[in-house]
Image: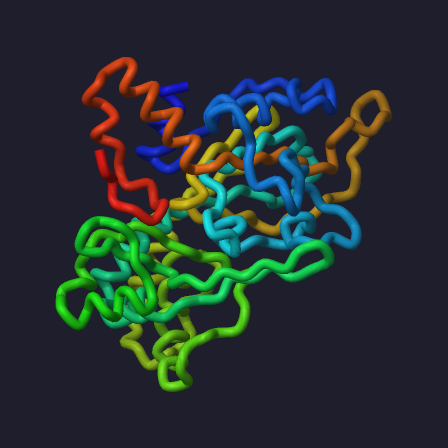
Length: 329
C-alpha cells in the first residue's frame, strides 16, 4: 500500500494490473472498491451524487457527459465541492475490440500552472485573482463553489484566493511567486462568472491560454492578440506532457484528482464482428470502467502514518499534493 501511495503522490498517478473482474455486486467484494478503501483509510467518499461505486459507460439519456461516448476534456471531478475527491480509481472491466477510441488522458495541472507562470505571468496572475464559479444543477443536485483556477500559498503557508490574495498583494508585490498549492479546473461544470466586467477580456484570454496547455484537442490557430509563437508554446506543452493510454481489462488507473486533470477521447463502436464460432464475443462492443473516490485527508493520513511507522522521518518528505496547503511536517 505504501508503494502505491508513493507512486500516486510522487508522480500523480499509477496503474495497477491483473485486477480480477467483479463477481458480485457486494461492495465488499468489488476489487476497485476494496483498493479504494485500503488506500483511503477504510472508506470511500463523495458518494452522494453518483454512489460510492459508479459505472462509467455510455448509456441512453445520460445525466453526465461521462456516461456518453463523447470526448471529455481534461478536468477534475466534483470541483463544486468544498473539498473535491482526493484519489479517483477507475477499473477497466471491458474495453471491447470493436470500440474505437476511448483512450484515457492525464495531464498534471499543477505542473501546467507553474509553466503558465513562466510563459505568461499576466495570464497566471489573472487566474489567481479572478474566481471561477463551479456548479452542479440537476434533479437532486444544487451545488456551487467559488474559487480561483490557481491558488497560491499565503505568507504562512496556508492557501488563499480571491480577496485574501488581493489583500496580501498590498503588502507584498511578490506574492505571485509563492508556491502553487491548488489548481481548480472543470470546464463542463462552470457557471456564470462573478468578476467585474473590466476583467472579462483578460480572464478569457488567460483561460484560453491555460486551456491550450492542458487540452490537445484545442487548436493553436485561434488568434487572441498574442504572438503566434507564444500560443504555439502553450499548445506544444499540451502535446508534450499529455499522457494517453487505452486502458486494458484488469487495469486500475489511480490518480490524484486534486493535482491531475483527467479526460477521455471520444469513441464509437464498429459493426459487431463475429468470432470464429459465429457467436458475438461478450463485451466486444463495450467500454466499461468502475470508479470510486477517496477523501484526500483520510488518504494522506493513511500514507503518512504508514511512512512514520516504517521511518519516523519519511513522512516529512511528501510533496505538495495540490490540496490547498503547503506541506507542514
